[in-house]
Length: 339
Image: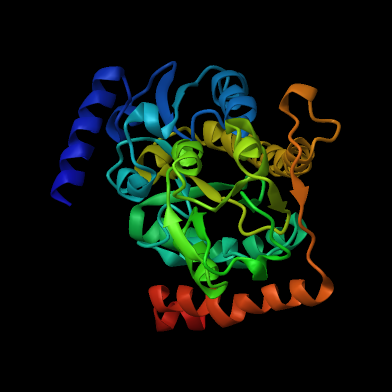
């Protein structure tokens, strides 16, 4: 925590110099409040097309100019997504996005609704999110002094491989890039070897022969050129890269009631947009990797889709209770697992 504490202090100083009001400053009367938002990964379509326009354009409009946000990605803010819970608890930012997978080792419960194989479509995912939302809200509120305002999802994580496979059950012995510790449980149950490789190093890892497969979003994978270094893809969702938009309690409470109300309404609309975009980008990502319309010709690949038979799909789904849930329960603890 020493290094983290130093990072937080440095970041807090930087944000103060940059003009971020503290909770005390927010309580003082002012015509406009300049706030900074830490949200998302650079280059992700939903961030660029939905989050940035919301914060920069719509928030000043719906609050009558009372809130003037500046939004930064994790990398531009110099924050590791794994540290966002501490960032929120320390009040370094007013609004921040917490990536469930990034904090899954510290707070396994936050990733429960996004465990691999829990939801095969957005309808099932919404049911899981609704059922588990009180738990997430309580954890963020009680342990980190943060109020949850919205739940975002991205297109599902899928399997890319550089040689043929008949099913996800056919990956034994392969080296697979995973995006979360929960995916590691699944990959090991498949007899494969999970590896942690940053998203922006995936192409390099394939070129160097360090990876055979990678789990990531179909459209982001296409965007960095995974369709050029891999040949086969499965469309079975292995997680949805869920995140939570939260506000620091003190800073949020200091906002005028009418500003809070406008923000809640606006964020509800943004959440709906993000979910619709996830569905649209799911279809577009697969089309691009498989070389089909409506993907622009320049972005089309020629990958082979690997379908799951009824039998293999059932066998893969059985790994949820055989491997994924037990692994999550070990990290989560008895009380959490019972809940």
